[in-house]
Image 1 (cartoon, rainbow, N blue to C red):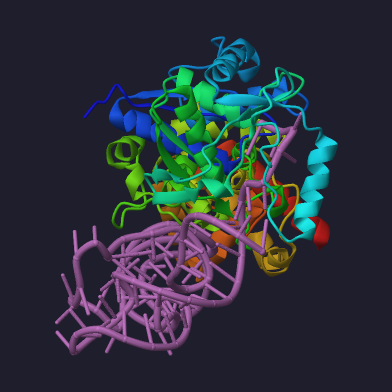
Image 2: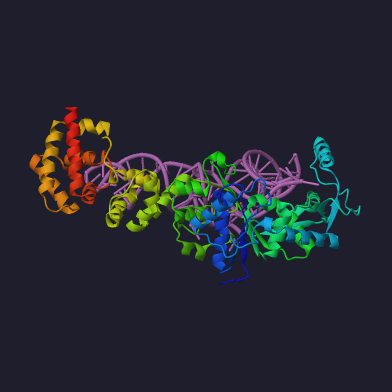
Length: 471
RNA sequence: GACCCCGUCGUCUAGCCUGGCCCAGGACGCGACCCUUUCAAGGUCGAGAUCGCGGGUUCGAAUCCCGCCGGGGUCACCA
């Protein structure tokens, strides 16, 4: 049921790359918007100009695009970066001064710090005393005047009603003495002016929410609905951070995770739908409901992500997968001489053997270059005098046998094994070692067919020469 | 410290609202076996949670009530 009134936003601050926690918050917002036929907005919270960089904005935008989370409003359109909105904040601040919802305070940071220390010494929580509340000042820092009594209830879509006593809160600063607005004030003004209907964000903002709600009310605006999503945790159950290893979307991208797998994993982290594990984007937008998101934190499990990633890789068609693998092949310093069709076939033999695209290239390395060496242990068992004879025999057979396709090749090998009175494995492993340099590879006859007669024979000759050297 | 959130297999979770079908189901991972020219993939089976702890309420509690404990988050003229 489309609900055009649904307007949600993802509001990262560009002080670093996009983290998986942020990516999940973005995803939940996006899913909520798409499920309801609403609007998804991207807003850049760059009020902290010392820590925000253009480069980080690029990274975040890039990561969101890669994940396929498209926004309906936001950059590059102007007006979606906080640094472009100072006039709007000033306007709202002035309005609060006029209505008496806020007042100026000239307490110096030194004074406040002293009070904070004193409170700490008395083992109390520091709260601003309200010293300047009724002094009628016309300059200084601007503070929001909170009601002293009563409580504010955050009616959270995930947690249910959460009550905060006003006595726990204090008159917080909206605008600093130097005239710059604070983060919490910007957020309220932005959400109000962008007509955000549902604020879906990280759990770490839950404690700030009552302060913000009081600001909405002072401004005379309707309060949006809130949903506070739990945090993603590291193995030690503390909030996931760089400390726990690379956790940026960019890092997973470079590790060869495909976007659909990451989206699927992130969605399932804290959300579920019966016993289903794999969800297409259509499934997700159709089934996702913010109310079904778990309220407890979730540990990030790379192993499960990799399992999902393999499931996606496995389900992909050869051409599509080859295209995705392209950059990873290049990055490994390899080049492809195959035509597109053979490249697709090669990748198809690899796809159930790799958890990531990086692994896919590693496992299929032999397709792109001749083995630089042969597995030392296997060499001892296969590159023997018998091995030399068998290789010579195989070269002869492979040169004359007309059809170089998997079926006929297998028949050739089985016949030859029978003739020699050896097991198929003896011949197959010998060939595998000679052609790939390893003891493990995709099905041998597929590999031979894809490589082609000339290449296979050349590699067998090279192996024969290697045995010669050893003997 | 104060306030707030959270607490079911190692991990992600189902079940909790509307007590009994749950001596707790699925998935990842782990073990075994099957398949097999290797490695995977796939299939079958298995180990693994006294539902954070302690009290209640009830014929009956993972599910309702109370207390505690543990973990996390927030408390800036940071975002």
